[in-house]
Length: 79
Image (cartoon, rainbow, N blue to C red; front, side, top):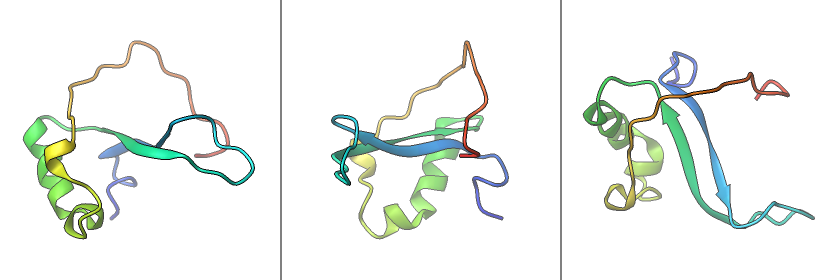
């Protein structure tokens, strides 16, 4: 089962330098929210991901921080 379906990855997507327009996508990185007990659990999952194993993601540049939501609303558009 994919990790987004089982709830490990809660949210993920691209970060842009400015809002995309006219087909331009000024991607500067990505952000993900994982539901995990430890940072090590997240690192273990990342090391098995195709983006990591194919060299797209560089673990030495990643920042992994604990996060607790103070507010939340469902996403629109089924995304």
